[in-house]
Length: 231
Image 1 (cartoon, rainbow, N blue to C red):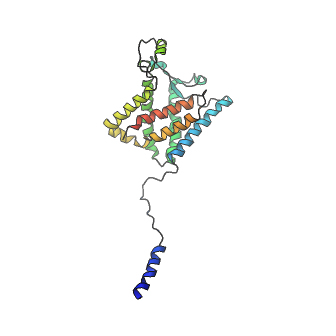
Image 2: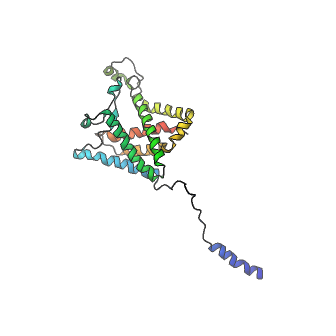
Image 3: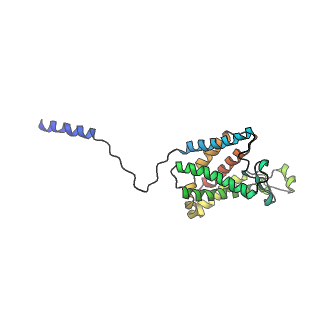
């Protein structure tokens, strides 16, 4: 009887003891403030809302860089909107980069990423993905049979500029398998799911007469293609 009664308070105390919490070690990364899904929605809606200014006669995104099919590389790049035709190509390219970097840095902070590493990694991703897009727009690769005459060429691979995706995938394979140190250095910005989700949100809100959201979505998809096959 004495042994039986002595067990009761012990069990009661065990049940009433508060759960212990383990503090995160100092220097560990902070927990993300939002998920990639919500971040993709926020970025996509921001770009979509900016594109709506065109309804009021203000082209707020027309300075973005775009690439046409080319034989002469000096004639390939230009601002997407004729409103900004006077803008130097270099300024248009840098403005596009800074715009995307700024938005994604805000998102990266919400995800708890290292902003310095993310900025360095995204810079490399942006440049490499644009090179893939540029190469994929070469007329000898991309021109369709009915467009060869405009470029005065007798043959082409007929792949359209979507061949940039193939080049990006090949580039991702090369970087992932033969350049592991470089791949590790840009790891903080290797977020293909985020880029793809953001591009899908932007594409979902497109206006057929406004190309800039389409261009930004395409850039994100090419960045994702470049990174998709990396470890």
